[in-house]
Length: 447
Image (cartoon, rainbow, N blue to C red; front, side, top):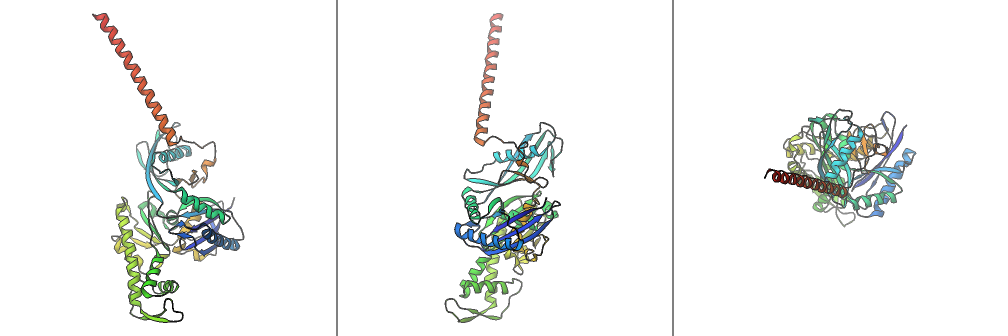
């Protein structure tokens, strides 16, 4: 049965809402979209709930007017320096000797409990990137296989409970319920990565207005995420300060002359800060130097983050740049040189059906990725922020109570292990006492 998806990308510069319809064959058709300038949002986090709610509401209402429908549950993005990622693993036995969704769910949940997640953090994604069945490694999909045990390596993404609560509160104040929360970088990778790149290993860098989200994709799942609080807005601010011109004029200059491939020596007229009507002449060489300096510094920091990653040597597909800042002319060539000559390209989101060609733009990668996530075009298996196992075949597996398997909480699990250990010690002590008594009787009879 066809269903509607509402995706909302809550960024530091813009809030973008997209309403799409997914049919029984998984074909997505965009029905409407709306974009509004962000307020009350800074570096991916909510700084003013009322203003953020206003931006979300206006974007949502615009999309509803175009689409002619008003879904009230949304998949929303989250970003920021507070997002953490950690790796974990688990081993589970297979009682029935055949791996079902229940065993996969149990393996992922066990990996969650084996991980060290702070108490004030909440899990957004549990993403398996490597399965092992008995002694066979690199299993793509263990479902249906015969085995005695299942091993899994997972990557867990978590965020502070306060950040999630504030995000949900802003969205709810806009008249919308949060259906799911997705890491922005993860969503962008769903939108821009090709199938062959996922297997080879790739880094996706979403260069937005005031942030850069970096995720590394390997073994058909993301295995690491990093954050940098720098974006294209910093270029605008640099130009405004260096040229003594209002930010709005600096933004126009960046869009018109933001090309890193060639340095021009022409002069342009720009308005002067604080004096209405007065203009000044500046050299395009100065504009080029300001933009180049900021972009080079940003890419060098990102290159350092890549160097620090343990996955650096497994990026066979190289680096994919996306987001609004990636539209600067010449950024691909400069990034390739600074990323140790790794293959580099600028990625556009996958084309969706519907008369909305403007979405086929790097600046809309995250919101398109959210739509794909809602249509189950994500990692083969994952546990989402609602603690449900999502698969490409069955989105809400854990809604089936018969297949739901609750594991003990970490503290109860530890208590149970301690009791078992104590019982084993008492049993060993009792056996030792019996052996000593038997030896004493034997010696008495002998002498």
